[in-house]
Image (cartoon, rainbow over all chains, first blue to last red):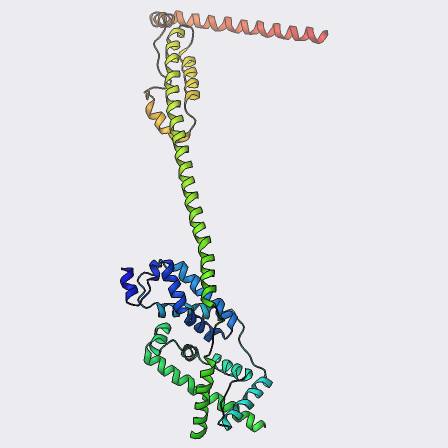
Length: 191
Length: 191
């Protein structure tokens, strides 16, 4: 039976043979890492979360028999572990000078048609704006930053429908744009 | 926000989110995960082995204790039976000199000492011993007792007189003994 599941592309982690588990690590470690990073925005924490996710898989593999979609299953575990870890961390808060610097950079980038690269301040500003979004919108936009996950898979991780995910992403972008425009206007009037 | 600004912000946000999602783990992530999992797996296997060893030892100890208790109980029961037989034999030979209460008391003492100490098997011991209707157990009268009984039945008045005379003589004897004891005490004090 295990062989049949493998041939279908699924990994029977419940009866995980060492080789099967190793294959899962090799195939999905990067996905797990990116999910963790999308939440924690820190390489060290993301790696720790990836390790913890696979340790959990090792511990509970016998309980979870017949996993049909190991990718989504792993993604869901990684997501939960990352969320748990993020709750133990202090929230990101930017100083006024850092916000001013980031908005100046944003304005110059918006004015020119050159290739845009995000500086440290801009990245931190974007992170703080995303962190300040309502929970459902924040989760959707964070998971959408993971290249390996399709909207359908994001929906499975968040235990909602695909259309709901698309709607949340749209609304999240709207809110982010409004906030950025507001910040730009505020600093323009100050300048 | 005018449509032009909206488009600019949209483009910028696309580009920013594109860069936001670029998170690459350090090289060798899979190897580190597998090494960590192997390290986690070993204590788990050891714990399992220890648990099994402790459980086996507990079962062996339990079996040994049970066997010991059972065999000692059998020995005690046999001893009790062996002790009871000579007492009954001796009892019949000494009945002429001892009162039934005296003999029954002795019998009780012997039985108490011969009974196994383990409270677990108390019920079994009681069940194995013969249950008597009267306590202390009645014993046949000696020849002297039979004669005395006959005398009391035939001439009760004389028996009362004899008993009274006996009691008075006993009192006199007691008084004489007390006088002798007081005399000897006073002599000792004078010396």
